[in-house]
Length: 202
Image (cartoon, rainbow, N blue to C red; front, side, top):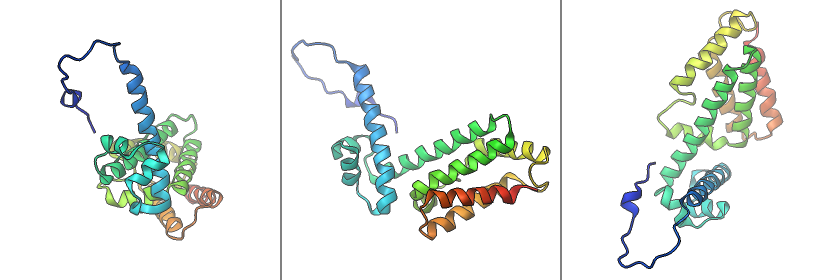
């Protein structure tokens, strides 16, 4: 969400002279508040679902609710920001996997880390994503996933018929069942991540 500083300025006639404001520090404060709010929203929404309120998020973040509303005028806007934050993490993690020297190790690490993310933040899978009109892995990163799968398959490390769609279906299906069963133990999620990887091997 973009903020128009010009529209937010208030002209104060005859204001007394004083030291110049430290805008760099204000920007740093805004970034810290943003990070605290998103982290708190992830925790609160994961614990209480979308019934959680903005004041609850503000309290967890240690800021006033007005601070939250300045950046996110509605709860829907805050949920959207949480979804975008987590989807961006998935994008970045997939890019890292694509840079791995061993495509099989890169793919396995990506799958384990996605399962770890979902184990601790099932809101993303169970409640946020179904309300967002977009896939978990977006178009620009689907190409990266396909590249990793193709490279691993060409090495003979995956079944000859495996595709990027297969990986997405296995991750999504397995994760949704674990979420529906209320399983949050990270060890169990890691176990199923390894089983997904095993299913892809020849």
